[in-house]
Length: 146
Image (cartoon, rainbow, N blue to C red; front, side, top):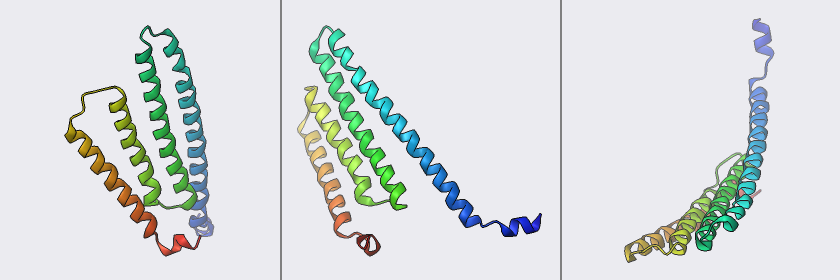
């Protein structure tokens, strides 16, 4: 029994297990994206059946923007799987898109937005953009060689 354990290359076992898990997650992500796309396309039916066209249109716009945020988030996960490490600039993209989505939804639904909210969104988007830009400019040397 002890000789069998000595002959096992645990590092190779870990790499193969990790590859299997990552491939399973990628398939799972693809299935989730297909379900999300079908749900988003299916919400067009609500546009026709709702008496108030603008309410249905607001719902569809919100669904499409939410789908784009999820798509960007999953794209970041796939980027992680390929590079085997988190890249700050690719992780910032979903956050920036999420903040812009929230701003669009608030402005599109004609909610009363006070100037403090606009200033807050502006500062948040500006700071996220600065962090993303700095992450691209000061990327590690090992990544630049790839």
